[in-house]
Image 1 (cartoon, protein in one colour):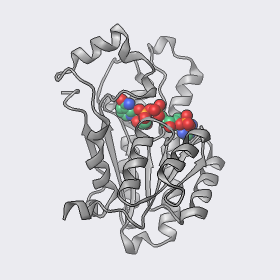
Image 2 (cartoon, rainbow, N blue to C red):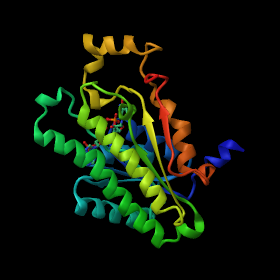
Image 3 (tube, rainbow, N blue to C red):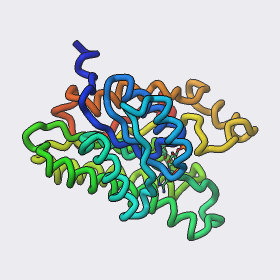
Amino acid sequence: MTAARYELTGRTAMITGASSGIGAHLARLLAQVGANVVLAARRTDRIAALAEELGTDRACAVAMDVTDEASVIAGFDAGEARFGVANILIANAGTSHAGRSTEIAARDAAQTIDTNFTGVFLTAREAAKRMIATGTRESEKGRILIMGSITHRLHGMGDAVYAASKAGVAHLGRNLAREWVRQGINVNTIHPGYIPTEIQGDWYQTPGGQAQIAGFHRRRLVEMEALDDPVLYFCSDASRMVTGCDMVIDDGQVL
Ligand code: NDP
């Protein structure tokens, strides 16, 4: 019963930031449960290789810079030409420039906001326009899942702009959920704790990174697979009556 409710055969998911880390993992996950997946990122060699791995009958790669409106529209057009309108968006693309705020360059702060906040807005807006035009109001199958971060609840961790971008995107998600509540589009946000990916570089191999892990209550990082069930829930019919929700998945790191 539960497994059947997570079935996504016949659905199409646009996943931004699918070239590495969480996005690539979630692309594999959604393909496994039957979805067609549109893999979006700037590093097109990586998403092309992932599309090959998943099977080109099931996956396609589209170039997209989420900070650039024209690129977002072109990426959605390319995905739509291949698999039809995406009725699932995972707005996952993100970036981070860690460091004390007194040392963060203005261009790095702007890039963080452009990617983590404006990028989510532009992709959610594009996804919703297309979903509404193809009848999500009747089907109630529109799903937008935003990748937040546990940092939206933390202070002084050396990534103030990043943390604020994630707090902003969670509030954006709740507002979009309200705007589209009568259009059959559910908008939810998940907030993962710390998962080792390329976004932190080699931080967790350094003494500082090891000390951070030792400071977590369970002395460990979050496993990527901890996201699987929540993501399937939010993308599938199982979450038909859930919108405007924030879910923290952090192994208690923030408690
Ligand atoms: P990665 O660095 O592995 O992945 C980041 C992804 O974002 C890449 O695929 C990258 O693709 C893409 N991206 C960055 N900028 C752009 C852009 N301008 N346009 C399109 N794509 C872009 O890190 P994660 O997998 O860890 O990060 C994925 C998401 O998860 C991010 O939003 C991050 O903030 C969030 N997150 C991560 C946590 C962690 O501990 N790892 C914890 C909480 C949240 P490309 O460079 O090819 O364009």
